Image (tube, rainbow, N blue to C red):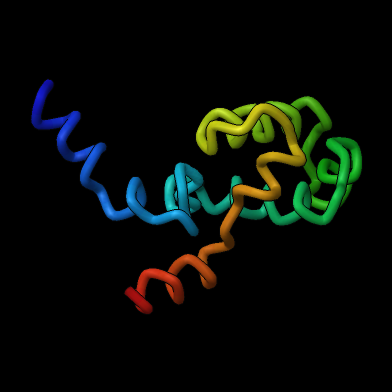
Length: 94
């Protein structure tokens, strides 16, 4: 338990103000696709149409993403989200 807490407290992402708690690497490939569309302002119906899934499935993905990013809403998630290419670039600049 203590070791897990130490890992969390001293992980690079915990100390990085750019990445904060929204470490995008925790998202699946599909969640990255969904998050890119959310960040562009798409609603669940539009996401569903674009990706060929149901609006309910899009809603479930968005809810999981919000939880993973620790966001209260879509706008906050979009602000916290760092696309994978940008995240890799930022990690390399430390």
